[in-house]
Image 1 (tube, rainbow, N blue to C red):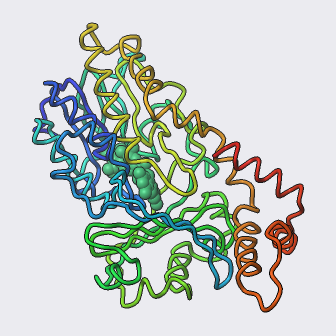
Image 2: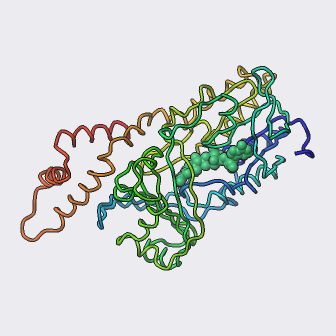
Image 3: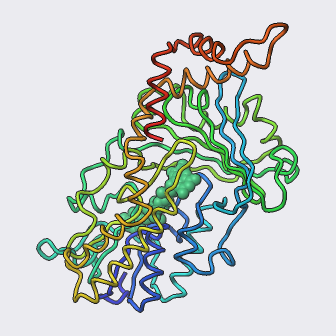
Length: 429
Ligand SMILES: Cc1cc2nc3c(=O)[nH]c(=O)nc-3n(C[C@H](O)[C@H](O)[C@H](O)COP(=O)(O)OP(=O)(O)OC[C@H]3O[C@@H](n4cnc5c(N)ncnc54)[C@H](O)[C@@H]3O)c2cc1C
């Protein structure tokens, strides 16, 4: 770090979506910004499933659609319930360009390049080890024995947030606060994308799976189609993965690819990449006591800004937008005369007015559904049994209502449990 000037307006810890978006915004407003990334290059350490919602990114980067690495627009959504060798799927086909698939490594590299082009100094291969403080005020960062000063630091270090932990700002992560995600990117034949997934040029599929995919453990699987590859993986609550997984977690992904109803999508495929990462899950417990301190703002996964609705994850757009709002708050604090917690209080206010906090509040409690095991065991089995009873018959057809009750009973779910679980799902989702 010797050649780095010793004072910046802003230091950003982590060049992920949150860090890169904040650094980009601030550089376009004339701030002198240093962004530090522990990976070899921006994007090299970032992991996600495969789909990003575009609207917030369009707002941050006006030329987003022209130059960003968009692989395919999601035009097909599929949700499948798996039980044994069978599955029941809901399929939706649209064409409204609201979300796209990509590699996060490419998207983050693109965002960081935008930041660098706007004037941000990026230093890779550097791990920030602590916050530099004067009393309670953050005045820079430490990396080993070295330090760099800044008027304000944006912590965008992601879910592990070891820097915040070492500064005593947040407690250590608990396994019950996070989920474990594992993922493979596999190269597939173009004909598989066209014929098996049924996708035309530029069209993509986002597919979520529940049930036997995690052997009934709370969590689910995902499949996303990229330009010429497929991302496949699953997410499980970490404490359940530790105590309940009956195999190495990556083997669940192998089994998913080999499933009799899925293997045609992975015929002759070749693994290009394998990754694993934690994901904020119990986001309200993860939330730091404050988001704005004297000289410090917290953005992205480090602040617990992620929405998991079971059928979709929103982390990248939440992270990028929170970084962008951190940038706006710093701009306002600068006009007010300095980076005190009071002047930076615009940040939580901007977040409250934005889709981020509106969504997190609207879906507060959704993670409680993860603790209802029936959603991952009995109900996927019931969906399969229901479809079988409706469609696979010889002579007599049954009334749907009776068939629902019979399928529920077959899977150990009585009518009252069915109703109360139904109400719980409707209430939270
Ligand atoms: C398996 C999985 C599937 C997911 N699926 C989706 C999805 O489909 N769609 C979606 O929108 N979101 C998804 N997410 C969530 C999404 O990936 C995250 O919410 C998002 O990446 C958070 O961005 P961030 O910038 O806050 O953190 P990160 O992306 O984690 O970036 C943090 C950066 O900080 C760097 N860093 C960390 N510590 C230090 C340090 N001490 N010094 C210097 N640098 C440091 C890291 O190397 C990293 O580059 C998924 C996540 C996982 C794990």
